Image (tube, rainbow, N blue to C red; front, side):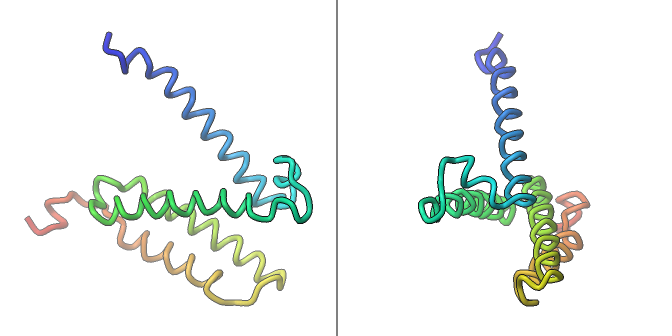
Length: 134
């Protein structure tokens, strides 16, 4: 048995656990945005930079994925799918906060919708050779 094949079950378990933690934190941040600071031991005025830093890490990860997808959209379609999902959630949040008058209509509401439409329309569905005119 190759070394990676022996480690594969452990890797899969760690990836699944990490994914569940990210899911939990993401849903908490969206549905109960005030809950995470106290969970991490912060308090009013003490933790103002921590959660934005976590969000910033995710922005950087998405930027990395978009750079990969820009170089080879067919190979990195999963990153495009993830960005469509992210932008759809961004749009839903923006629309909700706009409807509740917490934010004005603007880029926070309009741009995610634009990106969803463009990425869905331009998503690489056909084969690479066919798309590149070969």
